[in-house]
Length: 213
Image (cartoon, rainbow, N blue to C red):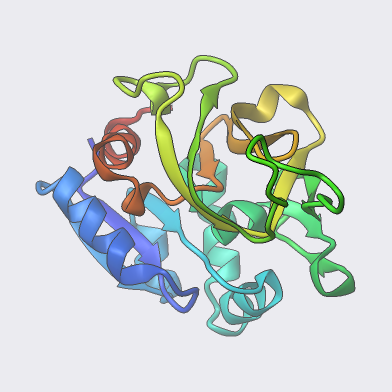
C-alpha cells in the first residue's frame, strides 16, 4: 500500500483534494508539490485541476512537473481529477485547441446542448454544475464498494472522448451519455470531484490509495 502520495501543485482545487485523501487514507503521507524530485519519489500521484485546461498545462510545464508526471505515469498509479482527467488526453478543443499530456488517446470536447431540454422542460446549462449519477461502464478496482448509479458532484463544460471505448469505466448523462471516468493500466481519472462527493467520493479515493495495478 502506498505511503507517499503527491498531489501536484499549481493546478487549483488542492485543499479539498488533500483533505479528502487524508480522511480516506490517514495512514498515508500526502504532500502537495510541483517539485520533480518529490514526484519522482512518490508512490502514487494525484493530478487535480480546475479552470481552463490551457492554464493548468502551462502551470504544469513551467513548474517543471510535466516530465516528472510523465515519468510517473509509466510505472506508478496516477489519478486525474476534473481538468486533471482532461489533461491526460491528447488535446482539448478549449481555447481553439490545447495540447494535453497524451497519456490516453482521445480528445476533450465541449457540451453541445443548444435547443435540448431537460425532463422538467428547462434548458440544459453549460457548465454542468451539481450532482449526477455515474454508471459503471465496466468493472474496475476504483468502483470497489461504490454502488453503480451513485451520485457524484460535477462542475464542467468539457468532457473527454476516449479513442478506445475500453478506456471508459464510468458514464453519466447530460443531454446524452458521456464518459466521466477512465482507466487504463496504472492510470485512472474522473471528470467529477470525488472530494466533493460525500462518502462515495471518499471510498473512491480510498480505493485509489490501496490499488495495485
